[in-house]
Image 1 (tube, rainbow, N blue to C red):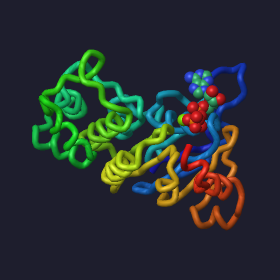
Image 2: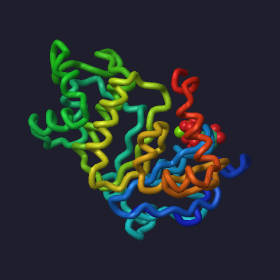
Image 3: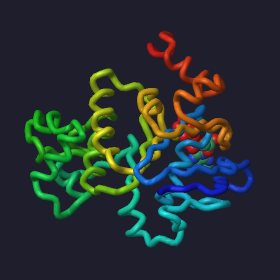
Length: 246
Ligand SMILES: Nc1ncnc2c1ncn2[C@@H]1O[C@H](COP(=O)(O)OP(=O)(O)OP(=O)(O)O)[C@@H](O)[C@H]1O
Ligand SMILES: [Mg+2]
């Protein structure tokens, strides 16, 4: 279970709070989608779980234990983060994946890549899993990197996931490959998704709308549509042809 209890956060004392009085619980195995305008604090909220930053007020707990009381190894094993800013070492694709689980067999690595919908692409490269990547090697696209990050996280197998979805539009095929990969990854884990895609949000057990660092609305997709507030407006905007094309 991931719980935010009266969480406040500021990047620095001079600027105002980035998060202000956040209370939300994601039950074990449940899913939370966080939506809201740019700059509302969504990514920041996600950062507090793996302690990329620490709260300035309140606390974040995993199964009731303050994340600040967990040792670094335990926290790193418990929480996986998937964002599009995945770092690839100048090494082979296989080594980049094995980094997540040093004792993984080739079969395990391939299985993770298949589940993450990136195996076929890797297999199509001239040197397959031996292809050198990173700064001076083969360059994967944003959507491909994201799927490599998913494969790594499948290998690491953490019970809690923080997913920061790409804001940039992916083409329809990549989009559905990434969606399948994320579905495979989320299965049976507690997930907190910073959601930019309506499909992710709709399927979440719980939705929170952030605005200016505060929770403006919360509920299920259906419930929030009925409330006809900010969430309903976001959904209307997202389903307008003009927006979909941009
Ligand atoms: N490292 C940082 N130092 C100072 N301020 C920051 C830092 N990172 C983010 N902020 C500020 O905190 C606020 C919340 O940022 P955050 O990245 O959490 O927003 P977001 O909701 O994820 O936005 P987006 O939808 O654009 O990803 C913004 O005003 C942002 O400028
Ligand atoms: Mg963000």
